[in-house]
View 1 (cartoon, rainbow, N blue to C red):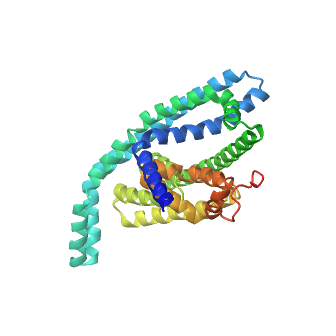
View 2 (cartoon, rainbow, N blue to C red):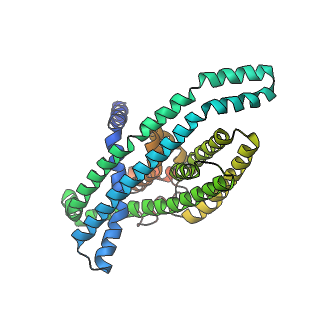
View 3 (cartoon, rainbow, N blue to C red):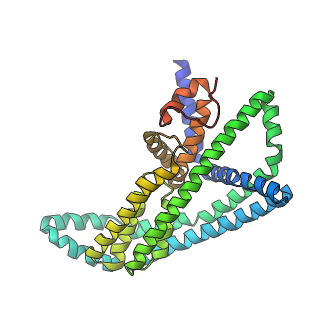
Length: 344
């Protein structure tokens, strides 16, 4: 019983620290992922092109810096454009909604109008724009973290070996780390391709429908598609809402909604699983639990990081004998780590 109480206290303390230091921890998690993605590229450039390691590292850091600043400013500008345009169309949307609600009868009309009055969509949109402004400061902190990781990269194997005091155990830890990095990298590459394809299709639908904000909607679709399972649903809902905001025509909105739903269904349920294949070996229920947990603690950023964190936790648990049942529950077929030899 004493052990159980101590475990509950430790878990509560960890949750408190995760919530209070969420900004720094989110930036650190993103920095680790970027460091993982670029480490193999740096090694390949150094070996194949015979470029000094310090030069390849410097070029990689410059590329990450420029890429993060461009990505954060682009996302901020697109979100602000969508929010500003939606607020400008608020009055016309309310008129269109009133005409649409009249078809449901007086009683339903009264209830729906009361619900719309209580829902402050303008305030919600302005709050969303304010949250997006934190992307730039977060990007600068990520760049700082990645820079120090690159500086320490050459000494990491030595530190691991001295920390364990056993070369065989150190090699095992490096193998586990490499397995985590490899699977997370493959997942991110596949997800980037699938998200880009989905965004391109949604952009084409908006262009064919002669709707404004095609580029902004495509960017939002690309970003939200990284959230597993529910991200495509949120992106589709935003797309349909913007189609109605921009046109005020229920028929056009329905056509755009059906076309975008078909895109999300085909890519998300056929192409995405086919490309992902055996990369993750994650349980669908485990993904939902991870998404709910990290989303509750870290918000939208936690939803983006839920799958990479779950991959790391599952592989680590697989190599710790008393935690292996947790890894089996989180895995899809009971094999949490197929890249390394089974733990003894």
